[in-house]
Length: 125
Image (cartoon, rainbow, N blue to C red):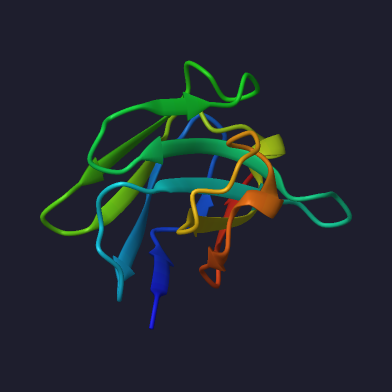
């Protein structure tokens, strides 16, 4: 079965950096959209970045552009979210997700994605 496992979260001071990892298993890795989302307490889940696995096409939300980037390692079947210059407003639970059905919709639309990881907490103070 499809499994997505996030790691790399933690507590950092403002201005610091983290790299989140999302390891995928149970799926042929290339040819899907994988996204990173985050959710702060009391707020809706929002798209942060997405990548077309094996194709290199990426999107990054305007709110984090210039500070975050998404990348992949095809051999490890892992997608990364590199986060620099972190701000307190970046605090939240970060989830990765994959669209295995080639759904329509924008990359940041949570309804597009059909498998989700359990999340990793990021706290910026």
